[in-house]
Length: 256
Length: 256
Image (cartoon, rainbow over all chains, first blue to last red; front, side, top):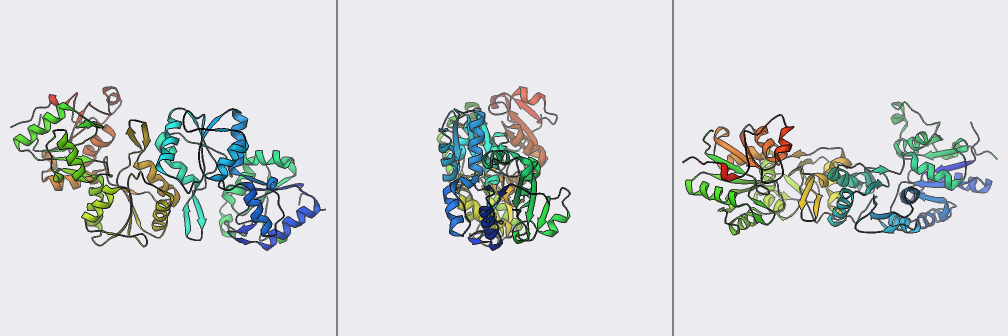
């Protein structure tokens, strides 16, 4: 087993399940902190501000600061800032997306946008979709925080960002650039924040289709932990395996 | 030219454009009425009740009764009634859809639906989409009034029924049965209402992709009139032509 110096860690299914912490993950992150390894929580959830996520983690006993949370909304804002520093953006999303764009000093507009950015929006309405469509038809570049088609909740699977985003792609015929996992864009951004190299960084997550593929697509090693979505059975039919697979993070030994 | 005894007539682009009547169409429909030929207005617009549509037509001088308007919502309600007379339905749509389901004596429910029916809904919100997704995942049959991806308005092209419907198909992985034009289902239903045979009925419309294809798919003759969407240029690249093509309905001679 290689020694890794930096860790990108998924949240839901890896560190907690909804409102329940996963004990082995709490212990694992505490060890990373004690041993001084840099780590960053990497989430496709575009709706929350990193300070809210960090607060939730700390309440569960998972040591974290706001700077150690990296959301798909933040990756999206960074991406646009890199492409066009003075871009005008029309966002369709929740607080986490709006705040990420503001934190990146991007101008938010209703019309004549350079970019239409869409993420999960549980306050979606027809007027927001109409403005998104009009801006894209007028030439705005279409960017999406993440493509998850379903949102796991206690009620069952509800529509995720990827399914809401399809309204704009179907009506305009324009496919968005996706930023979140499994795309490499969010991992590339996260590595810059973490400050470790590809070679010494490990991507940890429970979901093959997002977390592990993000690692593979970005060319970094990956660790699948069976505490969430992807089962051992699922993995049998998959060709391109994770670098490592474990049942819980208690099985993973952190070098000194 | 064949003699036709019954006429299925599209509305927007054929009889009027938005709020403006098309004079040649008004004269044409008056002649149909004077000569006693049965005609039925066939529209993919699922949002209006037929009485509202008929009122608008009469105000423009187009003779019509409520019974002479057949919407995609009505075709959808008839379709479900034929499939399962006691079906429980969860609708996502506007007044026209709700009223059509009630007119067909179908029970409207939030949960445990046998059918999820979706049409254009300009009051769409996340909770409606969530309930639609949960019902489909629980086994409800998914039916859509029409697949039009864009809605022409004075602001430009806004999201149409087909793009909103994609939220549910993408999140559940279940494709709906579409009822409206260009599907033959709505034409089959309309022929029953009109009471004429396939052989003696003509489908008239301005849009190749909906009106004319509906005629072709249902096996009835079609007349494309260049007062709306489809241009002569568009038609050049199309293999499967309309039976007839004219510039305005003034060119069409109605037999006695």
